Length: 265
Image (cartoon, helix red, strand yellow):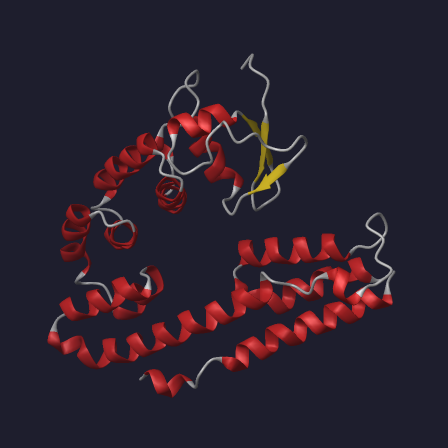
């Protein structure tokens, strides 16, 4: 493109995308209007992965060929669909919906999960009957809690004792994850614990950024191994090491804050 980019987006896994604010405001209803000029050199951090952002941005560039969603995995399609809904990119929303209709026979549970999340009622109603032969255990891992509750009400009576347990399991796990995510994605602020903080030499910000990204990629359940893997980044600063221990304690406290599992059964 010959037009100079005036906005830089950074994916959650660290890839930079140089784009045009005018395109974003023209082809979506979820980005700030182009009249709100970004600060010079500003990098806007996004919660989407690089794979998702790359596809989404192509939907908002008039001189580029529209992405071919036929070749996407169901997981990547779900990510693009979620981003398209979040930023209200109409062309991407329509394309994702059409693609889901094409793969509903192969991935009915995944399509049901996406369609219910984004209020695609017709698609949800087509997908749901195709999932009735599936186990509650599998459904509880693929559907969000609201959709799983609805799915349980449709399952055959002979599965009732199984689904009741899985509902409790799903509610417990969802609340546990909410607590853990809150502690992981809000690490201690370095300025509060490190009064002689030196941005050029202190590694805390880089460490915290790495841990949160890795927990996103590997799932929050693996937070212990992620912190252990990258603790060496703080080896030169005792204050940062203490902050690392504090953050670890915060996450452990968040784990124990979840109510007892049996209360959800």
